[in-house]
Length: 480
Image (tube, rainbow, N blue to C red; front, side):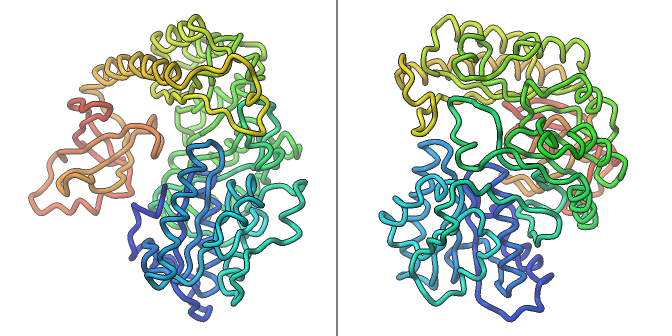
């Protein structure tokens, strides 16, 4: 759950000042649950609120209006969303809160049930109405919003463009850029196409315009996100992901461009060459493989294409060894056998991946896999996940030890949570929020009165000196 933990009141209030021409309407807070795509939607809602006179705050207890942007992907996310709503609702009687608004994937998935079961909520905003959040916040009526749009399941999920107001909920040096919405893939475990609709890509010119705006704010890094990043442009014919990367690199505005959520079938030699050769594109690729067993992948309806996951990874490691790979796997999918898990463990132990996320399969109503036979018990899923995480830990430890003494470019994120004498940083092969980090405990040639704040948001050189669990420890040795 994100309630702007890295911003603080002052940052949000400064961003609000860009829209001071509108009359003051009250204080608003947005709580974001789920993925980075949701986070971007929240940032657009923040822009809409600020441009209509609302002061943005990061503490719900200080807000007159609270908006919860929910996740409805998995049962655990659904429970977290409902718990969050119920935690905030008492502020209407105990605090200054006058309106509680809920939007996001949970509303898309269970709108009718939510309206009946959560009378504490004043309005449910459909995902196509995100820009109307300030209008709904200012309505005198407390009746739940249920517009005709809500009943039209054929309408696609909201997709923003560069003309819309947006207030970053990340530090200004880093940002997520959503390049498309929806997905056309038939994965049997996934509810996202039913929630967010089919693939719709933004235009390259829209993304370039947004990037120019971000660069003007001091953004050093953008992370391109989509449900299916490698399908970008396939619906429009206006240029694909490789063309987008070339155009972004030609701008020479952003120092780091990172790709998240690449689909294996769309990971082509042309894309890999673009990642390797374009100076501003990080040698990093997040490519969710979901499994290594071809039998399991077939039940998941994950097409193998020309290369199985193993062959694809081996090809990347052989021909593009400089590209750091991150992946995710699902364990406990219906029909998964011990032999299937052995196959997956073998792939992990070969050491191809910088970072691995492993998730237990969650049977979700509305997905084809929900009714499959041979469901795996929760206990077995947990045991399999723990086994595979241990396998990856051994690989991470080995890779980390090999980095001691080497020098890398690092983006300084901020002062470390545990000590104001330390800085937190990331290398180009460490994505925000999901990967480990570099802890800076020394600055070469630094004076005693050095101000650590002067380093934040900038890219420096760091020599790795030791390892602390999953994190690296480093010394700054110069700025690039």
